[in-house]
Length: 546
Image 1 (cartoon, rainbow, N blue to C red):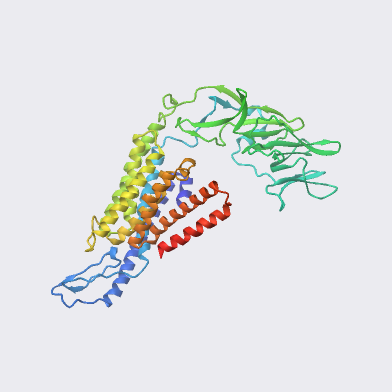
Image 2: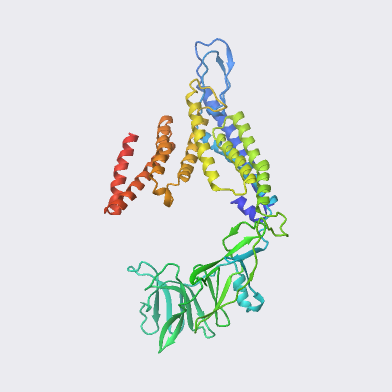
């Protein structure tokens, strides 16, 4: 929170706050380590036992990896290891890990701001689907409408509106499964649904000079189609209030903002509308293109020139005030001449290279040095994060495509190899010898973290929850063979409940898949199918645990 606040003030403030916070983490870790070591040293010195078969005296020191530092004269022979009993050592491990991560976050701020060509306060190019650049002449609009168009804040619309005769509000009774438009008139005072029924009413406005007419956005409750909202306005007919709309409206009201202008018109700004193209109704969507990254299409933002309409509430006549200029958008092959970065590829290369040398490599080196010196069990995790950052930075700098498939394979395969390496170290450590600095606590921390990474990314890699992957029985068999069952086996072997839990969650995913297939292939109801499958699977998993 402090870092985010500092970055909000300016990246230099954020850099300073992150640096101070990182220093605090390391200071707290060192201080806590010394206090715990001193406390456990006093306790263990009083309880030390000299071995009778020893000959010469030597100084035995048990360092932080075993939980305590003790120096005492012990006879030569089999040495006694003093193990700290305080669970606060985990906090020390976490503080060191957070401190190293703090180094990465702090140094990441520098390339992100120095090597990032994008100035978030600069202009954007805006194009619609047909390479037409929308433009809006604000000077031609009334001042209150200009303020509405330029506002980045979404209006806080009321949930009801009233005049001297009627009050409209959005309501839902126990029998309604969606909000309806209700009306209360000045004579009956009884709320009743409008005729025809209108659902999901919102954006209530009072319009015209006398502020007596209503306008609001809603959907027809009798012919409900998702995304078919329209603007309705009230009209008096034979002393009865009716609601009129433009059935041929091309405005897409989902996400649109409406405003009752002082000129008596209803103004609507939206970022898509429907237009005729080869006799097919299509949505013409407005895209914004960052001029500093012309190949990156962004979802429209409030700063974009919107499609601005005005609607006359008595006739529902629509007028589009946005104009269009046909113009080819910039691209990496035809970059904006005012853009110093000359496209996103150059920007990505500069940023990735800066992150590699300023953030990723220092984090990796700091993790390795601290781990070799202090054997903190949590530091292999930060080493893995640093190494991954190095590889990803190199990949981004060298590959303009930046495909997500690379990340799926990298984290799936490296975490699997990490688990295998830790198992080899674990079972070859019979004489409690360190292998590459890994002792038993370090191996356990690594296996738990690597299992979590592997579990997440093997699910993403096999794509079992996508539309295609969920129907692929081979993917489900594969993930059980290479992930779910091995995790349960490894967790049981090392007596690690977190790893076993991940495998068990995978088996429950299997149960969910089986229940869905059972529902699709038979007439069994959904609730019964889920009950039967999960009941049987729970007994099976419980038996495995027993």
